[in-house]
Image 1 (cartoon, rainbow, N blue to C red):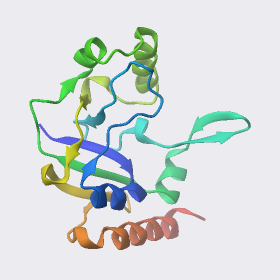
Image 2 (image 1 turned 120 degrees about the vertical axis):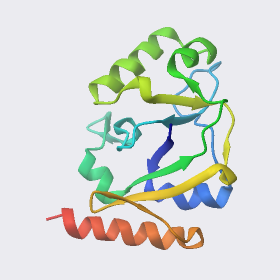
Image 3 (image 1 turned 90 degrees about the vertical axis):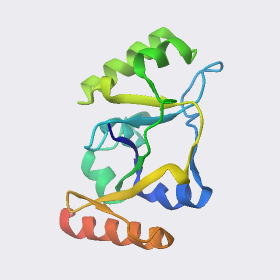
Length: 166
């Protein structure tokens, strides 16, 4: 089984520089455990798409907005027995049950499969990264020189903009 952490491509240099994937604390309850979100889905995880404030309401960016402005990025990580599935996350994270059900429902409505989702309660160190990739021209492309990740992302976003922004 392959595990991916999806994020905006623009965040990839910061993740690599830090040496780990941070625990996500965004939007979690006071007593809820933060985690690193992973999926076994090899396609863009739609719930990883960023949000913006539009007309006073937080809304997900469209796929095109995300793709051309921030890029689709992912890190494949080495599988670990420490990764927990969504059922266990619901029982062990202290997430409010209503929030948990809403998260599942929203994911399904966005075209995701929550059965593919996993969480790590500890940051994932870069020594466990198997690849760092960006979707360029609708194909996943590996960054072959992690020391040049910033230029790789910049070039990828520029390529996607030229192809998809009319």
